[in-house]
Amino acid sequence: MDKVLIRQLAIETIIGIYEWEKKLHQTLLIDLDMAWDNRLAAASDSYENALCYETVSNRLTALITENPIELIETVAEMIAHCLQDEFNVPWVKVVVMKPGAIPHAASVGVEIERGSL
Image (tube, rainbow, N blue to C red):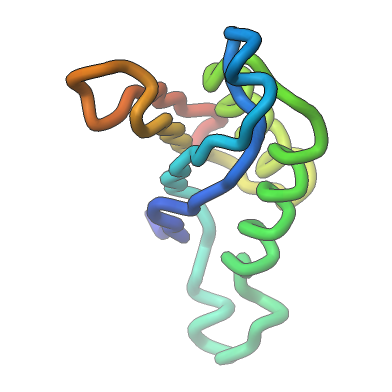
């Protein structure tokens, strides 16, 4: 199985359940594993046949920063839904990390997998 990977995509957004969180931007770190048949892109050496990680990154940044969100679980589901619906990714693993969310932990996060291989 081929995959296109994006690691630690940093998105500054309003995220959280507390009132103080709803007044400031925080960083989310996103890791993506996206199933994608890379053979055609490799054989043609053509961008047109590739899953463009820049286009994906820009779309997800716009999606996550459109409106305040309370839960990182919601962010993960929004990302998976977008990738499957808009980019025709058949399977995706999404990891959303929220650095500094709790004392004594570097980060907290969620991981989901959606679709089939």
